[in-house]
Image 1: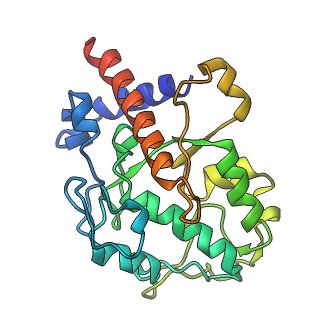
Image 2 (image 1 turned 180 degrees about the vertical axis):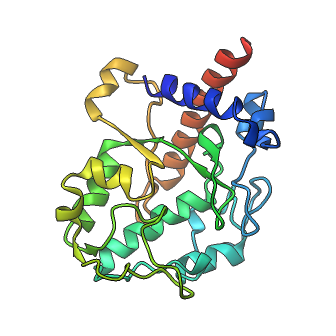
Length: 248
């Protein structure tokens, strides 16, 4: 069902006159989907090995982040975004930084990339299937930290200064009170970048199918296997799109 929704959304984008020069509409092979990075001055044009990565180093074998950008991510200097606009625990910040490394450095988001009307970003990814277990882990660590907005990307902050701040009059509340559930948190915090896939949906796909992505938390002992898994998820979705759109 999720891939059908994504295809409908892509068709809507293709029909819009404002997207006449959208490079995403020119993708006609699986390989092109798997050789993409978000269009950004901070990122590589295409994923390449970055053996010198010390920040976000889990992505050094194939990365959309050059070393300078990876360092900016872990220093909380990329695009001026700070995670401590309200009280945040060190453990929660660490989780967000791991996810942020994935969001910027992963070469596996091509099938979910969309154009966005933003002065800060040219493209974003939309409804990437995120495994429920990863969402639950993220929420469990962060639910007692504080926030003042449900959407941390679109309109959620005052950017009148160099960094993100809470809008005047907005109060910092526990994340658990703002979102109410792990699913709402994971899907809303980055403006529907993720769509949480329930664990019990595995039976619908088959136990060997690649149906959702995992966040490679850096302390996981099997980071390489997780990234390889995500690559297969992207490849599968790319094949679905190409087959549905081009019939091959």
